[in-house]
Length: 257
Image (cartoon, rainbow, N blue to C red):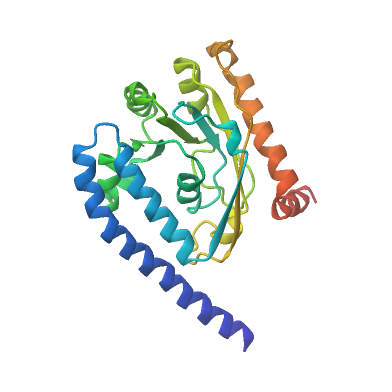
């Protein structure tokens, strides 16, 4: 009987999450499109995106905790690189980080009505993952915007983790940092997988933590050092997950045993 009750509650809350997300997207997506048309930097539509993100988390009773904000200098540009375990990650990061962010996202999101148009006009960097050369060209064109606090944001694994575990890191974020000589800041998203795992619709209430790592100066590195930097950033995020996430610790033990 309890199993049936839990399933019913899960279905109702999934509908609640989906319905409220659609409503917020329609209400805020349309003005975002018009604002983006006249915004030269993309900062104005991103500010509306922060409101959308706040509503998503507030409605679903997700409390955001951020550590390390003092490491970020306002109006300075960075290349942020993080892990990715949930669709909750982007809205949480929008709220956690004061910079205007240029997320690197899959091009298929552009097909979502209203939301996709807002993404494109808001200068989110949409890439075709099936065409690596074209993806690189798209990112290179966007590099010129990375100034006055506008920063690139890469989910280093390329997609959401299927089980909450840290996956292999791609080199795109590191290459952009090396080309622009912008500092890299590792970002660790803690326990978002517990609140909204992959293929789930319901956002569960709880605490989502964002841990901001120490900036990594790239001025002394060249493209020959890309593998070293990829490992350095991944080690920082892996170590932070092991320290802060009981769930991640349990997953490590599970896969090890």
